[in-house]
Image 1: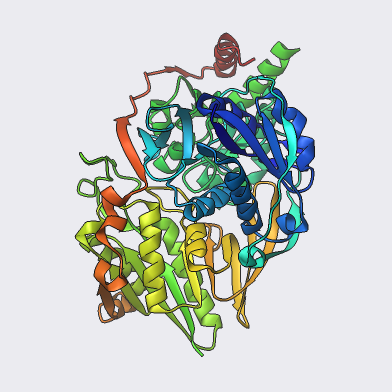
Image 2 (image 1 turned 90 degrees about the vertical axis):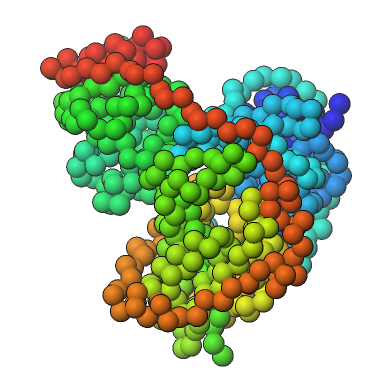
Amino acid sequence: MAEVLVYVDHVDGAVRKPTLELLTLARRVGEPVAVALGAGAEATAATLAEHGAVKVLTADAPEFADYLVVPKVDALQAAYEAVSPVAVLVPSSAEAKEIAARLAVRIKSGIITDAVDIEAGDEGPVATQSVFAASYTTKSRISQGTPVITVKPNSAAVEAAPAAGAVEALSVSFSEKATGTKVVSRTPRESTGRPELTEAAIVVSGGRGVNGAENFSIIENLADSLGAAVGASRAAVDAGWYPHSNQVGQTGKSVSPQLYIASGISGAIQHRAGMQTSKTIVAINKDAEAPIFDLVDYGVVGDLFEVVPALTEEVKARKG
Amino acid sequence: MSLRIVVCVKYVPDATGDRHFADDLTVDRDDVDGLLSELDEYAVEQALQIADEADDAEITVLTVGPEDAKDALRKALSMGADKAVHVEDDDLHGTDVMGTSLVLAKAIEKTGYDLVITGMASTDGTMGVLPAILAERLGVPQVTLLSEVSVEDGVVKGRRDGDAASEQLEASLPAVVSVTDQSGEARYPSFKGIMAAKKKPVESLDLGDLDIEAEEVGLEGAWTKVESATERPARTAGTIVKDEGEGGKQLAEYLAGQKFI
């Protein structure tokens, strides 16, 4: 069976969930061969094997951490040349998208970004995308070269599919351009203990109606009762009430959780672009005319300062 | 020696409008008003600030697009850019990111540059990969997704806020930079700026000027093919309740029924 290259997003050997989802989609197209780079690369193998990787190609070198993007492009290209895959699948993180795009130029292939589904097709994989603020769904394929496709988090279920996952060292020689952009320092983001926004099954977001940074604790309390990530609308972020890393919308993160709870968010197109593909949408807003109510499966017209704490208490009580 | 900055901008259908696909599955540009992509305003702003700090700098705004795309160039010129280059050719209709990046790279090389600045993504295609592709094509360092940027002594420095970490980056010029919407509010054109923009030069180039064959671009030359575009069905109307003191409880009831609790 044909092989599919899967780029692994991991933190010191801990594989991030979107990569496991990618393996589910990769198995529809061929046998997944994973590529893991940097510190902890070999430690990814066991998890990847459990989810269908027949092989795990690994490489580690100081260049991966010390220089931006290009060393990883060199490595992914080396893997591409070693494997001759029928497709290259990459998680839609900011960095991985850039790696995928540069690889596509080098191997003279078309690229599709931010797919939400992949199916096998007669003329190669067909990718589904959600476009124009999720008002359209498109199906596309690559008509030149080996398909390079990046896939958004929460696009497929993680499935157990044990495979060999044999570790093989990947030999990489860096191009002279590899050291062009130096990473002078790196400050890890402080952990909030909550799930990653784009990967979370439930997201609780606050907007203009939260009316102040100090009030965001009521959004956080609801999120914590549900084991959810916290999001914020652009209005709340621009007002300085919550960090930009939590912004949901066109210029922030795009999320597609099982459940999205919007509190005090009117639902401007800017925001809808980032959450409209959520499976179930719930809103709390005191304005019955707010456009967010056009999207909801369940809406409460009311004061979020009354409704949200009451909901939090009720969730806690039910969970015991 | 003057610092030559090229800012790549895109003319896009207004994201707040009702955007559609045309019959050939390209973006319908007739139904919705076009404008300078909001995210590119941040690129123009950072170019202006870098030029202010430099002893001597010249900012060229560059776009690839139909006749109307001149509006985007005029906006950037009225913000303060010095001159504009417009690549326009009927054969460009339907060009994908690979073709667009090829045209931009050739036009940038023809213009001459020390620093290329772009926004983080367009508001229509929203891929966000064009800056990386440009750096690959031009063979210069990529310093992308910056929320802070400065240039000094031929070195560009900036802060890239990623999902897992915040990174300080550094590269020698020439380089390709992209900036996010966190890089700083873009200025509004002044009346004086708008008047001055009318007199600023806009150079028009076609594919022949850039030694690009028609087969390399356009819908036929694209390396990706959109096979179908379907309007998302409106969500079925949900249940809306008015909070009469029991709203939180009712919502919890609903969530429990959906097995979220």
